[in-house]
Structures are given as structure tokens and as C-alpha cells.
Length: 126
Image: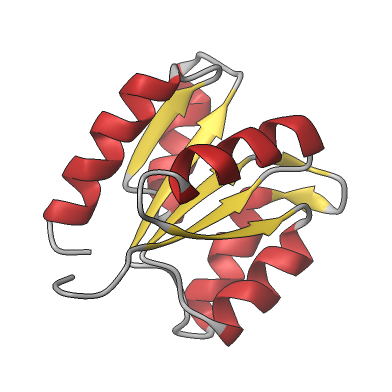
């Protein structure tokens, strides 16, 4: 993406984590949308496609990967999807990658590392 402000969709049901991510990305020049459920993530991305979606897997209304599957079916998936999970196992990683995630990160991700990676993801042409 060139010239535009990168749009980050944070799909996270923990209000404190979501708020911290909004602050982190907004203060570093990103446009941020928050969604606390899978349904809200789908609605948000259909209305305003994100460049990068940070996707929690465990949401109040289901699995975050289901939201990604739905977005892909609607041809409204973000340019890049990063799964955020507390499960450090090969099966979870495989499920995420098979569902279309570009990257899988283990929570908690340090803010500095998240910003470094976001810079790479945006620069890669999202």
C-alpha cells in the first residue's frame, strides 16, 4: 500500500488488550478499527476492508478463524491476517495457516515486536 494510512482491524474480545492495541497503532500512524466478536469483525471488514487484521482465535461468538473463512467467501478478507493465540502447538498453527492466516503469533506479543512486524507487513505490499 502506498500513500494511504494503513488500516488495522484488531479482533480481540478483551477490552483492555483491544484498547492498548488501538492506542499503540493509532499513535504510530495507523487507522484502527476494533471488533470484539467474529460477527463484528466480518461486518467491519466488509464495510471497510483492512490492510492487516490481528485476529484473536477465541471470541465470544465462536472461533476467529470462522470469521476469516466468511470474509474469504465474501471476497472481503484483509490483505493480511495475523492470528494471535495463546496456544503454542503445531495443530493450532496448522489450522491458522490452512484457514488463510499469513502469520501466527503467540500471545502476549511485546508491543515493540508487534510494531516491528507491522512495519514489515505494511511494507510487503498489503
